[in-house]
Length: 377
Image (cartoon, rainbow, N blue to C red):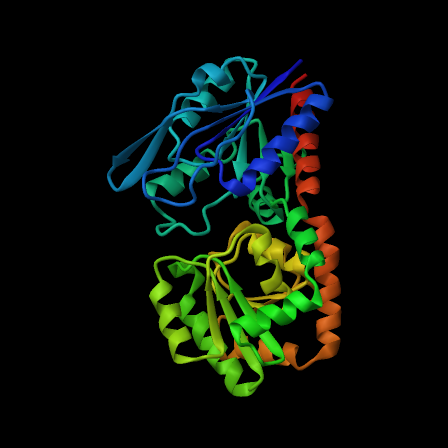
């Protein structure tokens, strides 16, 4: 029975269902799987979740700082050395990766990357860390690409096409889907009453309040939409360093409702009563929430989006506008005033929800692992 090991710095809560399903699917294929992971750097998010089962091995990460770069050492060598395939994060900060890449040249163990290809949110794209990442891009036996965006990067770098698996990054949204379907009209009316929403058109922001999410632009966009559409109201959901901006706006404008951070199924009623997602900053997996809830997402053309931006088909399952407040607001207002657009794009969201699901992600990963194990033999 071949053994596959995935090494992760941390396991965020939304990854736990993926690894659990992956373990079960690989076992059904006669492949032994183990996950090795550690803890977050103190005081940072996301935090690392506990994964149940003897196949999930938690180790202690050791964090180091060198010339303004944070490095991490993971004592996972004893778990990786006997594996047929080791899948690591494409991260120049993870010191074990360098030893595994060298070991893979002189052993039967194959080493694969799982990642984005480049760090689109790197503060310094020409830093030593990013240059090392580019240098090692083609040094692995296999690539598990986050999305088609990553696939394009690898093709341009002339990495062998036959050794690329597009995983299509996703989260387990089945529970969220069922929660949305279970929300009744009475619950919607009750939530609207609780929040004091009387307008017929509702915009929702869902995410962290951090600089890349552009909370000031979120608020400015809501104000401009309200000037154009008096029956528009906004819900802002989340928390983070820029929370004071949101709290001040909510205090000044009674039609702008701050509801704090919500997670999982508890978000369902808020999505259910919303017409659009107001997300002008960088986007990631919130786009999958958009598909499942059939609440179209509006964002702007930024270079720092996560790889999930490749899921967005402009005008079909969401919208990406030029990076201009006026153009962004015009697009949202046009949509809110067009029943035909609403019907078309909601259908596009529904179709995309099937394509970018957790089951599809697991299927893609399993297919790639099997192909990689067969490739060297």
